[in-house]
Length: 273
Image (cartoon, rainbow, N blue to C red):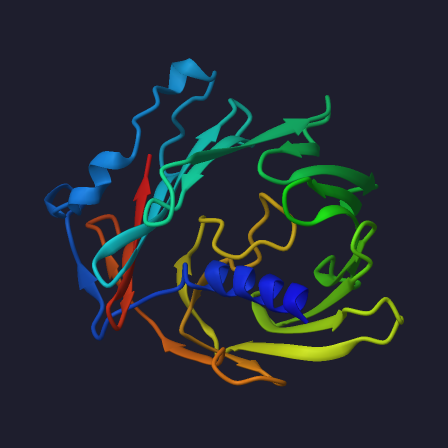
């Protein structure tokens, strides 16, 4: 059970990228006053790692809780537009900065991610169908399988842990516009082969604003939310204290891009190249 809860909390943290306010607002990004903790975000030069600036692409994302910066990520790109690297940190809990490095074959297909977790990806034609994942500190070795529907949408992810002998199955459904609709998370903590439904997350629709940020990933580096969601509810079916209900509104810059979303005392800030 502890393993399943840990995986859910990681998913919940991912979902917290989704935030809002009460009315959509328009700001000039140059006039937004940064939080004092922003000075802790390093300014790594693009030439230092071979990255290039691609106008309009995501540059960084910052998540605040009760006015404090608790997560940030910076994105770096190759000349072909693929992700080169993502730096990220959780400054409220640690000063450590993590880096995920993306590796591709000669066709530009992602074959490895080297970071806090190490992934090796295996393709069948134009889709990633399997991955090996390794995290020596926390979860050991896992084998992951991805399944798709006839539209090419990823509908199931199954992860079998080879060291601690638990399994997790996540099922996804979509709206007609291709945006993610539901997430059902199942776990087998005993290795019996019998999966139990633990969590259900529902998105109640999306606005028309294009979302380029990696707010919710099934496969690393690939977002499954093409627009920004309107609201979300997530329920833990076997224990209390994990349920969430969130409704989102957004702020925009003068180019019409989403630069902020807030709900309650939480906020997410987006910056583009």
